Length: 120
Length: 109
Image 1 (cartoon, rainbow over the protein chains, first blue to last red):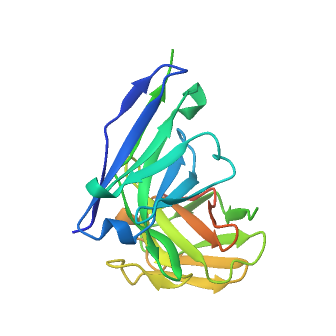
Image 2: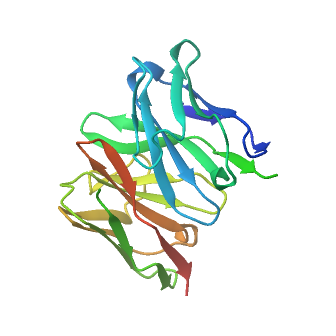
Image 3: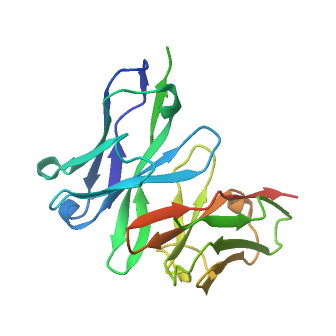
């Protein structure tokens, strides 16, 4: 069974750093792109970026380039999303999702989400 | 940047009725269009990809159509579990980007 399991909810202060994780299982982790999607409170879905764990090839949405860093450790089948200096506006639910791949560019399996709250 | 516009923002439908949701792209995305369902407190769930292919385990009452800039998701006979928010999502080849529409909320009439 394909599963993406994300790390737990975080409460941080502005200016702090954070790294959240997404662990894949039940499939070949290195063979599928993993994307990150933000959902701010009461709002829609925003694609942030995507990584191919096989070679760490990473692409960012222009809206998030320079704001976050996406990485992966294929030895433990885990992708990461990190911030060096959080802002209150980073408060959101963050999802990781697996890209089907090939000619199909949709996200077929999703993590349960990690809620990040940034507040002083 | 390709912009995805969904309409209507909210759709009020009675159980058993048909629901038709629209998604328009600001430029052609060919058939690189997916639909997702999201219920409160849950992660999105893939319904349709390639504009018209149902994802694994998705009931036949869900169907997608369209290509280019105009797409439709049809739910033929709404069940109680179908009341949710629906998002369309496009993929652009270069630069590679994925863009979601703002969502359509399907509520009980």
